[in-house]
Amino acid sequence: MPSLAVKLYSIFFKLQQRYVVHNLTKAPIHGADPFGVTSRREESTAASNPSFNDGVATKDIHIDPFSSLCIRIFLPDTVVSPDPVICEDRSKDGAFVYSGYSPQWGTKHKKLPVVLQFHGGAFVGGSNDSVRNDVFCRRIAKLCDVIVVAVGYRLAPESRYPAAFDDGLKVLNWLAKEANLAECGKWMGNGRRRMDAHVFDGFGASMAEPWLAAHGDPSRCVLLGVSCGANIADYVARKAVEAGKLLDPVKVVAQVLMYPFFIGSNPTASEIKLANSYIYDKSTCMQAWKLFLPEEKFDHDHPAANPLIPAREPPLKFMPPTLTVVAEQDWMRDRAIAYSEELRKVNIDAPLLEYKDAVHEFATLDVLLHTPQAQACAEDIAIWVKKYISLRGHEFSY
Image 1 (cartoon, rainbow, N blue to C red):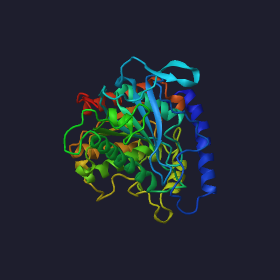
Image 2 (cartoon, helix red, strand yellow):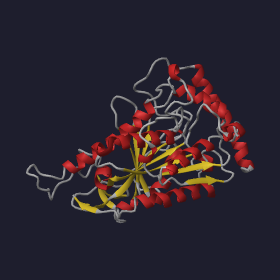
Image 3 (cartoon, one colour):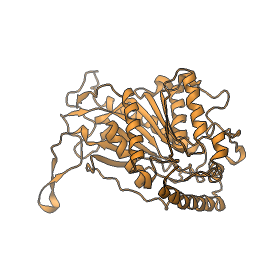
Image 4 (cartoon, rainbow, N blue to C red):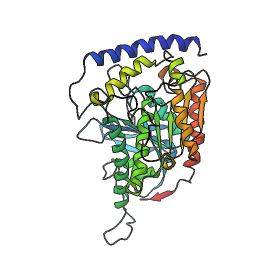
C-alpha cells in the first residue's frame, strides 16, 4: 500500500482537483477559443534559464501566432565544451562569464536525439513550464542525454478536442520544418556545401531555431506522454506512421506512455475496484473528459479516449516500439496493460513496467518527484529509450 504521506496528500490533491474541475464545469466556455490557454493560475511555474542550471539550459518559444501553443526546450550541457563563453557586459564596462549557450560558428556541435514530451493534467490542467514538469524534463534530458521539447498544448474547456491533439502534431511538423531550414542553410545555390554556412549568429538570431539546428537529430525522435499526454503522444505516433516520409527528416523511433489516461465504455476490473483510488479518482476524471470531448459527440469509446476501438487506423502492427508505465494503485492501469498486450500480439516491442504500491503520476507529481521510486522509473525509461537512440551522436561543422 502507498505510504501514509501519499495517502494524506492524495486526499488534499483530490479535493483540489475536484474544486478546479467543478469551477470549470460551472463556468463553461461557450464556443471554441482558437487561441486558448496553456496553463492555469493554480499551477506554480519555473522560469526558463539559458544558463546551464543543474546541467540543463532552457528556453521558451511561442511557435504558433494563431494560438497559445508553445514549447520549452531542454538542452543538456553535454553538447558544449566545459569552458565558459566569455561575453562583454557593456553596462558594467568589463567582461563577465556567461554560463549559458549560444552556438558559435566554425565549431563542432554534438547531435542529440529529440524527445517530444506531453505533460499530464487531465486535458484541463498542467503546463509545460510548471515546476514539476520542468524538474521531470531536466531529469529525462540528463539521464537519456537528449534534447527535450516539452509541448504547451491548449487546455479544455477553452479548447476542446481535437485542439490538444492538433497541437501535438503541429509541433512534430514544426520540428520537421526547422530541420529542413537548418539543412537548407548549409548549401550554396550551385548545390555545393558552404564551408562558412551557419543558420544563426552569436546572438541567436536565426532562420532556424539555433539550439535544434546545432544539436537536434530529428531522425531519432521519441514521443513521451504523461497521463493525458500519453493519449496525445499515441495520437501523434499514429499520425507519424500515416505521414511516413512526408515528415522527413523526422523519424519517430519509439514512444513512452506513462500511466495513459485511457477509458472505455466497458469498465475493466481496475476501473471498478480502484474507482476511488489515490490522486485521481474516476468521477473527477469523468468530469474532465466531459470538458474535453465534443459535447455533441461525448463517448467513452471516442478515439481520443479508447485506443482499442475496432478499425482504428493505422493498424497496430505499424506502430513504433512502445514502453508503457503503469501504477499498481491506478484505476486506469488495466486498459493501458491491455493496449500494451495488443501491441505485443502484432510483434511490436512493447514492454510493460508496473510499479508496486505506486499511484497515478507517481513519477511526475511534484511531491513524489524526488522519491526513490520516481527516480528509478526515470532511470528505467532511460535504459529502454537508449536502445532506440543508441546511434552515436555525429558532429558537424557549421
